[in-house]
Image (cartoon, rainbow, N blue to C red; front, side):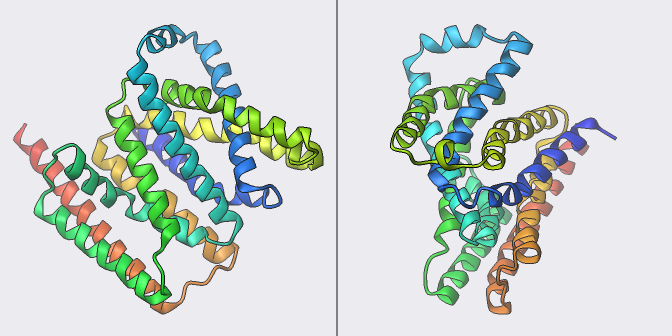
Length: 293
C-alpha cells in the first residue's frame, strides 16, 4: 500500500475525532482553549524545527513584509476558524461543524472561480448548485442560516486560498502563523492569570494536561497530512478528506446524542449528493488525463 494513503487517512481520522478532545475542555472558555492551542502548538513546532534543523526560511521571511502580512491574515482566519469550531463542540453543535467541512470542497470551487480565475467544469457547477440547495433547505427548516457550518467553511476556505499561493510548507507556515499570534495568546493568558481567571489559575492538573496536549494534537495531523499529500494524487486526497466530517457527524449523533431529524437529514442528503457528483467527476477527469499520457 502506498504509505501516503495511510498518512493522509490518519490525519483525517485525527481531525474527525477532535470533538472528543475538545469535549474534555468543556469547562474552559472556547477563546482560552484557542489561546492555549496557539501557545503549545508553537512550542511543539519549534521543537520539531530544532530536531529537523530547518531555520533558513525564518531569515528569508523576516525580509519579506508582504509574506508576513499574508501569513498574518491567514493566522487570523485560522484563529477564527478554531474559535468557532471549539465553541460549536462545547455547545452541542458537532453536527453543524461537520456540515461545514462537508461543503468545504464546494466552497473551494467557488473561491477558485472568484479569486483565481479558475473555470469550474459543468459537473462542478452542478455540485455547487445542489449543495447550495441543501444549505437553503437547512436554512428554511431551521428558520436561520446554518451559520456555524458557513463560518467554518468560509474561514477555512479563505485560509486554504491564502496558503495555496503562499511560499512556505505546512510545517513552516503553521509555525509562522502561531509565532505571529503568540503575543496576543500570551498576553490574553497572562491577563486572565493576573486577574485570577482562566485554567492556569483555576484549572486542575487534568485540565492543564489536556490543554498542553493541544500542541502535538494540532501539529502531528498536519505533518501526516503534508506527508500524505506528497505521495498520493490530489484527487485521492479529495476523497479521503470526507473521512473527517463523516467521523465528526457520527461522534456528534452517536456519542453525544445530537439531534438528526429526517427533515434536517434532507439537507445533508442534498450536500452528500453534490459531493458524490463532484468526487465522481474528479476521478473520471483524472483517469481520462492519465489515459492520454
